Length: 115
Length: 112
Image (cartoon, rainbow over all chains, first blue to last red; front, side, top):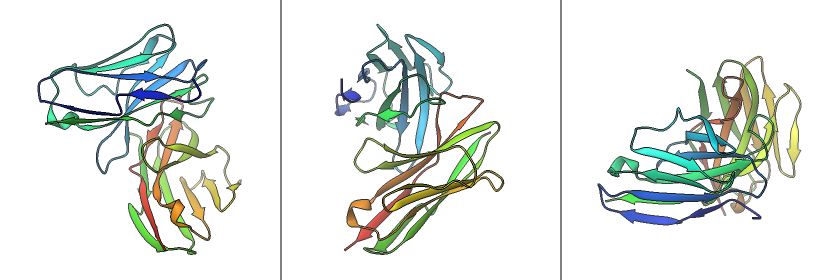
């Protein structure tokens, strides 16, 4: 696509429920990143994909968080048994190769609210 | 632990003023520093700086990097209300050449 698409744009869920956030990167971009932005905070790195593999999962805050990427394109970030502290905007970004070589293009984000 | 610190955290100016936003960093194996502008949700790219002392310009915005003193500044001249946004600074290091390490951002409000 022309840009990075994320869905849903807004999600309100109850504590303890599972949520799935989707990212559709720019066509042809091999690198895909997930970041989290909490109120008043900077962007917190979660995970990076190169193709379908994730060389760096170091930012995932707990084992309730997981992500996958299929076909070198769409990625899904799953949060199991959501907690109130998971409330944040989840931003996805893609680049042609990796951030060291190319600038990241961000999606508009998915705002998650856990009640 | 790598650190990226932005200052001020927030700023209110009048239209027409000039502002300077700061970004300092303490990282190992520095590669590049980037500036992004975030208005609603999606941060949009402004500048990538790799070499010290070379100013990058785009219209009323300019930025420069000092690799000796480990900081960068982003200047905006003749500010307009449309410049109101959060300005994010991020550093790429050789440790993780694929992930940007972001500061907390500077929230700029330009009043008419």
